[in-house]
Each structure stands twice: as C-alpha cells, then as structure tokens.
Image (cartoon, rainbow, N blue to C red; front, side, top):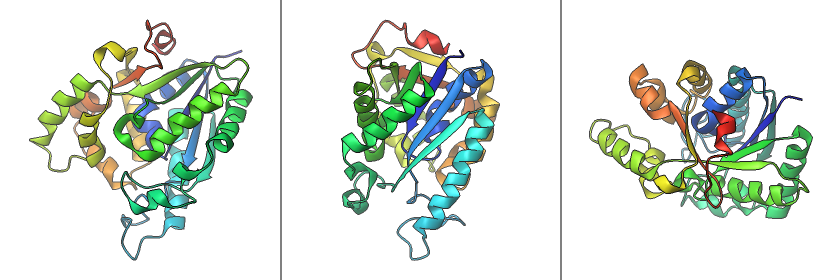
Length: 264
C-alpha cells in the first residue's frame, strides 16, 4: 500500500502557500494525498476583487469562488482527495467576526476533532501535517486547526506521525527586512511572521521544493482571486523561489529529524 500524507489547513490557498511543495512531491512519489480545509474562506476577496467590509462583499459568493479555487489548486498539485469541512471563516486576527458564534474558532473542539479524526482514519494516513502552535503567523483559524488536529490524533488508537509547518525566525527576520525596504505591497501576514516562527533549534527540516516549484506556482495561480496572492504571482522566478522554494517543519517537543526524512 502506498504511504499516505494528509494536510489539515484552515483556508483555501493555505494548502499551496505552506505545503504545496510537499504535496506535489508526495504525489509525484506515488503517495496518496489528502487535503482537509476547515473553513470556507468567505471573508476573503469576493468575485471581482471586492474586499470584506464593503457593501458589495458577498460572503456566500466568496465561499463558492474559493471552493472552486481550492479544488483547481489541489488538482494542479495532484492531490487525491479534498475534504471541505465548510465552517465559516473567522476572519483575520482582531476582526469583530472572530466573535461570531458560527465562526470556526468558536466551534466545539471535540466536534471538529471527531470529524478530522474520521478523515485521518479513512485516509489511513501515515503522516499528518498542520500548522505550528502559532498557526504560523497568529491567524486564529490556523491556531484552531492546529488544536483540532492534535485533538483528532489523540482520539485515534494508533495515531500517525505529525509534522507542523512553521517558519525559521532567523530566516524570516532577514527576509522581511529586505523585502520591507523594497516592497510597499508586503502582505500583512508576511510582515506578521517576524512575531512568530520557530528557533533554529526547534526546526526538524527545511524541505527543498524547487523541483516542483512551477507546479506550486500553477496551483497558486488557481487562487489568484485572492489579491494577496498577486504579491507572489507577480514576482520574478528568482524571488518566488526565495520565498516559496522551501517548506519548513517542526514537531511537538522538537525531534531528531527522523520524521522529516519521510518528506525528503
């Protein structure tokens, strides 16, 4: 039986930005691949680039748009199975909709964990990937996805191994400093990375994904409806590779790197 990789993400496009390379590499190596997306991304950019907070923003139309983007991107990456849990997006950190009862962040942990555990079990996953304890950059839905994944694994009699996508504090500090002086269009979430991340001692592996970088770019183009992604898509190839040519992982409690070697 082929090994199985399952990634748990918060929003459509996270699967490309954070794990598009390892998903494409796993698919190319004949792994079975599954992406679980917890929210519908309804507070992203609506059709036509309309931003949340304006009268013309339609959350339902945005959710439908992003579902289509997600499935197109996963097809580009070679993902076998896409599972959309469909919880309403909670918005960015500090937005009033963080407090909405229906928002993903406010759903009972045990309920969502049971759903994810069932998907992990059905996929017979050998390796599960989600975010680090900070949700990479402090997004409330990312943090909730991490909590849900860890709770889901605790429900299983023989849980698969877990890796958590992260960023290197030292690398992102240098990168953000260089980009912020040259790019007024630096996305807020990228600027926020300097607050979070993992120390070099906490890193398990930095996986080089340059061999599938064009696949990752094609998958990200499927999420071009989200204008923040234009920041990456409008880059020259060299800068795109600098930012998205590696994917960095840690694991709860650190480790020797044994798990990460499954991805290299």
